[in-house]
Length: 318
Image (cartoon, helix red, strand yellow):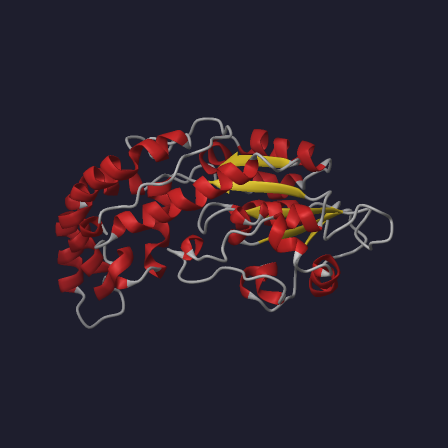
């Protein structure tokens, strides 16, 4: 192993915990709640985006490519073999991350979305590591991140199925890797929002720590899923009102941004069609991961699943 469980390493008596999951899936929330515990420390003061460890090291490639497509990159998926190619990976990562942890704490947290497809790599380096993955409905996650997507990959609805395919591909990889991980906890974002105390209790038990009661109580359980109606109708019911508001506020800062208005129009035209496209090409794979395209706020309890070779979306659906 690139890492070692002997007392010769500075991390031998720590529980390094990696939090992973696609962007806008709840990973930042979970990592912050863990980091607020008196028994844990998250990376802080790094100067990097969201204090993600992927940005302050040079041993492995972090998220490569756009938020909507990084898991397709050949270097996105790392395993034990990749770790063994760098014998001093553990020492170098510790050198990069440890200055930003409170080393008086037992649990040390590193959160980066690409951890979702790198668990085997980190387990090889840090054999005692623990892994927490947060999943969110693929349609909701895709709708939530499309503002960062390219124009041809869903930002203005055109190509939206590619965003969902990215979710499916990343979770196919994760599901197969999960069979090799010794210490893994999977949280459903939907379950976390419904009963945060119960779900975060699982986290506390998994890490053998006490979570800060105030941080747990601050979870916004009343947050509605505004994407359900959008997915069902393309937002056609709200389009006329938003358009009138935009016209009435032309030239002022209080109006609807033009990019948002354009997305409203393309949503109404394309999302209903894309519902059928996504269901036809990706529906079975999505259901295998415990989600259903007809209900965006529900999720089955997580269970390992191994998929066959993924079917690629037809070119005219992207």
